[in-house]
Image (cartoon, rainbow, N blue to C red; front, side, top):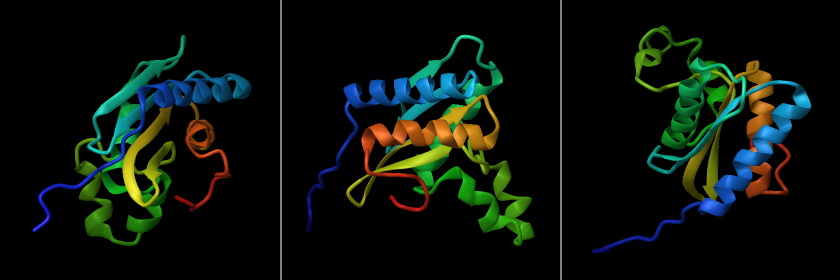
Amino acid sequence: MKKFYEKKAISQQVVMRMLEAACQKAEELGIRVNVAITDDGGNLKGFIRMDGAPLLSSEISQNKAYTASAFGIPTSEWYPLIKNQPELLHGIVHTPKLTIFGGGVPIYIEDQLAGGIGVSGGSAEQDMVCAEAAFAVWNPSWTGGEER
């Protein structure tokens, strides 16, 4: 019987750089966003609200990070998965913190889910671009898409 397992975690230093990268991308896009980074349990590891970012988006960014870390898939993949299943489309969306639109990206260390990034304040597409900028700090070879 296995008595314990090891899990990898994102360091505070990397989290700070990820927050900064997302904000820099938002500046380039001319938007103000909220950025949240969670650990593998969906617990907030880092958060920033840019000056002028929408207040409501602070909670949405945290929910996107939570969703990405809870399920291990980008939040943008949720709607396509459930749109043709009425019981899910009208039921699962009532799950607290679940977000089914773009801006949330899971963080993997090797094959192990280690957390999530959530961005909110722009359009779903702009939020995704900012989340991808944060993820690129973690994995500089990543260029978007399905790779984890």
